[in-house]
Amino acid sequence: MRYFLWIFGTLFALAAIPAVFYFVLFLLRGDDILRVRALKFYRWALVIFLFTFNVAIYGHIVIALLQLWGFMR
Image (cartoon, rainbow, N blue to C red; front, side, top):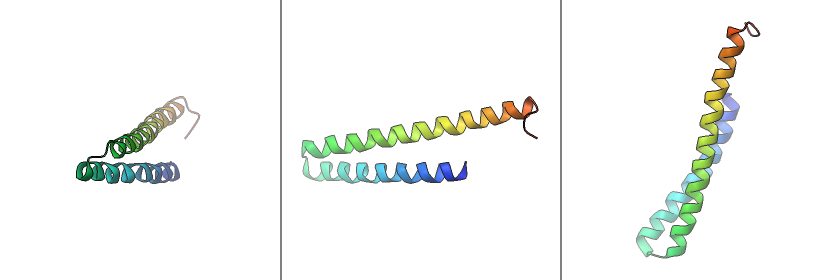
């Protein structure tokens, strides 16, 4: 799980940093294309974050159920 979180944390950062960068440029320059680019990166960052969160939560649930049923000790 540690490697999974590091990989998807890196992917999240790679999507979130350009989103912030383009949003700041949009605030400074006012070009609509910069806002659109910021939104695209923001949406990808959100998808990556929610996917990682869901896998982490459901992974813990599956492990707890397997331990409860005696398949893992």
